[in-house]
Length: 238
Image (cartoon, rainbow, N blue to C red):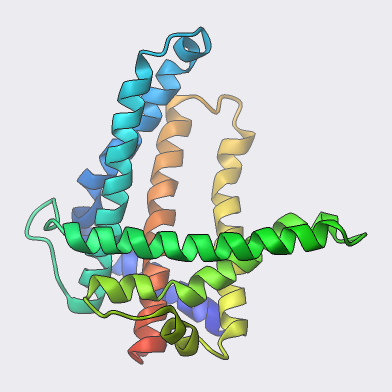
């Protein structure tokens, strides 16, 4: 199945280049780890009405957001251009990160509008309510992968319009649906230990969640890179 091949290739990109993946992301991912730890240790205080931790949480949250954009841009450029960081922090990509954010927002707005209209239609049709959530998640993932190839394109300074992205992924419905199902199922499976943990707020659960979160983030970014490289640039993945 082509969807499985794309997923496997994306995973191998990370595992076969784990040293580069860590140099691209380790320091930039740290604020997210610290933020989760800070939230976990501040939860009781905030529930008691103490708002003093909010400033720290917001600051770390902003750093996490910037770090995620930085990681995505740097990883796309490594895979597509061979641009390797010289140390433990990739080069600053400010303008490309802003472009990445803008394109992501555009895709999100378009998908959100489409799913919002669809949910209203589904809600009034008897018998379809139970299928609404999984159906919308699958549809959202499908459209994201079809349009999302503009994201890695922008990081290598290729101004790809949405229409071109849609054309490049035309007739690839089966592979993209399978890919979306695999990633959704994988995300659920890796979260099962945390969901059934007797103490989900423990340090072990926190570490597990952050490690799996890192892999999910890197696999997700690699999937977009693979889709762009294969369907737009014609790179082999077998």
